[in-house]
Length: 155
Image 1 (cartoon, helix red, strand yellow):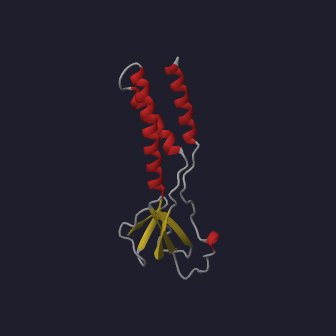
Image 2: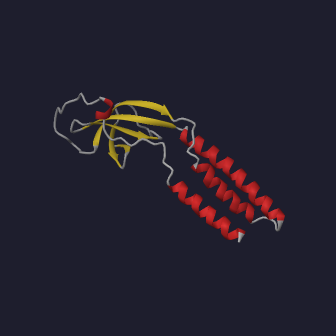
Image 3: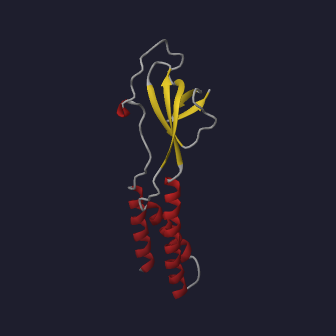
């Protein structure tokens, strides 16, 4: 009975973690930031290509939604349940769930605090967009890039 109850509670907790939202950005152009002052000066060589005008480095807040702690607790509890027998197994399950929850929360906080780069790109057709990504991969101000899948790549 306790195993069935544990699996049911674990399943419910897993479903709740699917509802957690990330702290990422989801914007694709400047108008919401008031940066649409450019005008179309020529013909477009490539619809998805443009020149990086500016790069800003931003840092996320060291916060967590609790999803990492819940997922870590479930994994830790399942792993702890595999150890020992009798009351030792129960203690190992509880200890594993606690340790997994602490570790999952710390991992989520570190992931949210990682550096992000905002690339301000003037596209060939005159549009100006902002691309948010975690790494630059050699991109600098003035670089000619292609934007696809929400990422900028050097050409």
